[in-house]
Image (cartoon, rainbow, N blue to C red; front, side, top):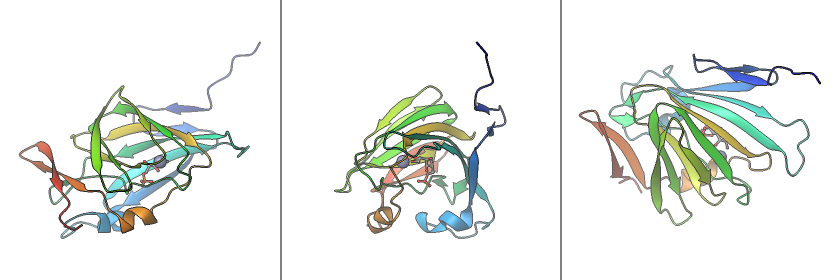
Length: 184
Ligand code: S6P
Ligand code: ZN
């Protein structure tokens, strides 16, 4: 029997290294429209990195997994967040596992009902394929979250643009608080 290295290893720097790992970076210019007040922000600010690995097979049961690193950036008081998405195939669930930092996993159903779960190192989340999901960094360190989803899931960003999340998370005097999204 041979014992070999695992296909990927997370390093303390927050970077995932291994064979067949893809990654992309979101700058502020990619996500500015999601925030209440984008004034004065530098378009080049690094907001989040996403590392992922997809199955070569792409069969019905194939899985993909990834790591999201969301930096502790304040956008005029609003906490840094991912764009958020529904899945194209709403029968596909997703698992998130908190690895480092502090934050929230925001959910929204198709009626606009919005709620959150706390995210921290060791927190485990089962996301129904019917709910939109977004990560929000409420802490002072990078928020790192591992994810695993079915290759068929897909990302439906358009639905979020038509029906944005019902709440925004702002930080006041060092404390995160949810405020109703008045732009709805
Ligand atoms: C994929 C999974 C994550 C997100 C990543 C960025 O289903 O949920 O890898 O893609 O956290 O979020 P978003 O909403 O910008 O794709
Ligand atoms: Zn997803």
